[in-house]
Amino acid sequence: MITKLGVVDWPRQMRMLRDGLIPFAILNGSDDPFLDHEYIASLEYGRIWTGGPCDIVDGQHAPFFNKPDEFSDCFRNFLAWAAT
Image (cartoon, rainbow, N blue to C red):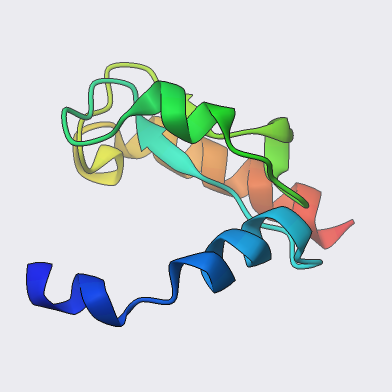
């Protein structure tokens, strides 16, 4: 994974998050030790559901595993929002 970091076009990806027209969601676990939650919340986003990243309470690095019901509820709500 680390060897691929140099291949990623970060400016293009950040531009898509900020200026893109495709609806998207960011679903994080609130207890994910690998994320800088403040940094992620501080970024500018375009068509993001809820206006910013959604932290699943007590979710860890993979909230779809340890909080599957909460993750599924968020995902269903995102899909309903994106369909409008």
